[in-house]
Amino acid sequence: MNRDRRKRLGSAFDMVAQAKDILENLKSEESESYENLPEQFRDGERGEEMQGYMEMLDEAYNYLDDANSVIEQI
Image (cartoon, rainbow, N blue to C red; front, side, top):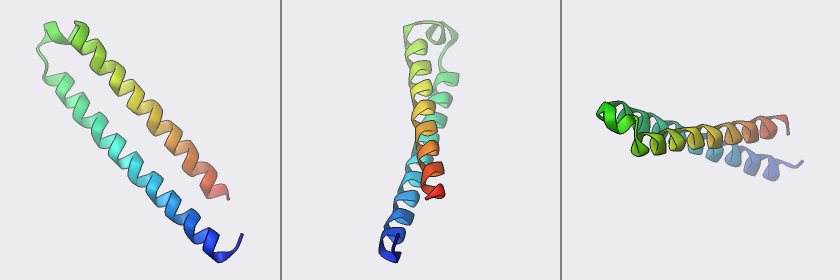
């Protein structure tokens, strides 16, 4: 791989790392909102929906983490 492609690959790695940070912050905010819900809402439909969002954010984060692991290997 030549220098230009390696440089672009490094940029891709940085962008994925930024996306991971964004997802981590979103999950933290969603978790905080969930914790601030009254208990009856946490146990209801809204709480379940929020938990689903947090799980999906975790899943997306893990995919990006895997992507950066592969990029590092290149």
